[in-house]
Image (cartoon, one colour):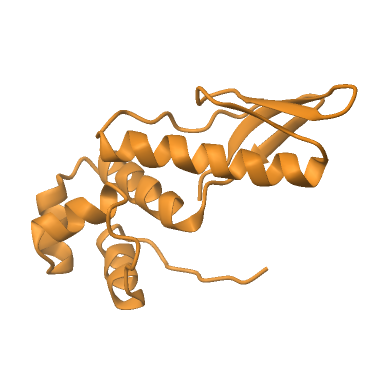
Length: 139
């Protein structure tokens, strides 16, 4: 899944964070709160952009001090990743839907983040359609 780089700063009584590839900022009183807020705002921004069919940048590789990598919520990350894989494969949504044997509109909803309850069976079919292996991991 994608992880987006962000730069954080320790202020007097709080931390602030600005994403590098996504137009979003947030704050937190503690580092833990900052990380939770960062995942919230990243997921919200990407979710809205997916719904509006806006172009979402691929995360850049950034190195240096005070850089964190934030992953969106899984239900948003899956939609974003599927869109990326499809575009990388030069396939249409209709072609993927046909490969997976689901209605075009269903695949469209998955990719736009409007259908968060994707079954494991569908995920396995999608992985096969993209010639990928689906790995589920609990960390």
